[in-house]
Length: 565
Image 1 (tube, rainbow, N blue to C red):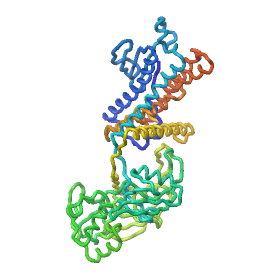
Image 2 (tube, rainbow, N blue to C red):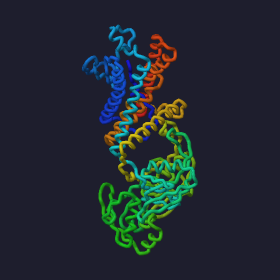
Image 3 (cartoon, helix red, strand yellow):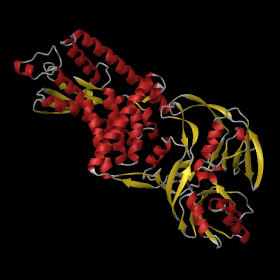
Image 4 (tube, rainbow, N blue to C red):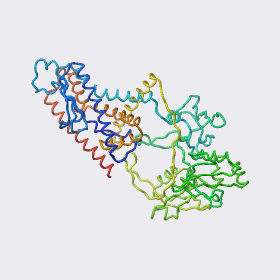
């Protein structure tokens, strides 16, 4: 019996980007769909090759254990069984002790040549890989939304900022090579070996070329290993137009702005990001500027009347200082909440304080603040703040908090106990579509990339670079599948393709009871010229079953600990 149980066992280290959520009815439904389709595809591979070589098939079951529903067509009974964590195809002659007629002897699995048995067994994993190729092929042909090369944010004082790149610029080419997707742009920056990059960009006043000298920053790769990589300081995501008030005496203060206001329109024009807000205000300088803001669910009209000196100062400073000229700043560095008893409260930090520097170095985004505070547990930090238009400096010592990183490793992280009005916004996307030939090539390439990634993940698991806690079972599949189905059918099918690759690769591992275990025995038979003895195969199957059940219990424990721990 070709039994497949690995639909319950996955190394999820390569899927961390998908995130997770608690199982819901939608998650359970998605789990049934994902496992049902993938198990059917896997067993269909065994079934088709068996029929092709004339091997009799007695049962084709989705799930294993007690029979729930079945229907016989010809010699084969098609079943849905009670435990939906696997499936099997039962062929004539798999049991050596089963009495067979002379006709059935010819059609039995064990009487086939080694190469035929090998192809029947390997067809299951191969069908899983082909399923992934077909899904990716359809995705590339139908079209899928992906990030374009519009820069949503540029870190202040970064190489990109110093070179002149600004939010809203769209990168057209890198070193003369056209790029249209953010992934391509990121790859070119990541793989850069030269001292500088030549970026051709499009902005409102036409095309421009900028020479950027990447810096080198410390980071971690997908497997949590330390690595250094080029950095220029650009992001595709941008900041939503949530603002904070610097001074009640400023133009924004006189207009009635408050920290946390979400700007909806400027003189009737909708604004969806901080960069667009800055640009729109610049277009209306010198006139009365009408804002519509959302505050605690209520839409409020505000009008800012700037004095001539204020207008002149903003024009001199440029469009990227326009908010400061009005008396506003990005709200994410304003303190929205201070935890009782926290280091921040003890140091004197208050709600609506604006954090502008740490240890003498300016910061511009909340992730920067988190990174600097998180990396200094127990180390006193000097924070420069702006409170009601006045500057002050406070010293705060982050608490050392033990957390788990995205790989499950315990790490010590600094916390000071504040919350921000952080409001990231996704950047623009484009619909990417390819002709059938290009789509097929890209589908093969993407499948190959994930095969390599899964194999590397397995090696990293063995080396204990990736903790075993990253492995997951049915509950994690339900969490991830439930999340993907909320984003649409396309995302669910993409997720299914990734799981199908995982299932195909793991089934080829040389563990008795899995397809890879059968293939191992066929290889030994091909070398020694006779089948491995029945007793040895039975012992190996029992060991394999023990290992598999142990793994199932382990990943189920992982799932439960992630869910309730």
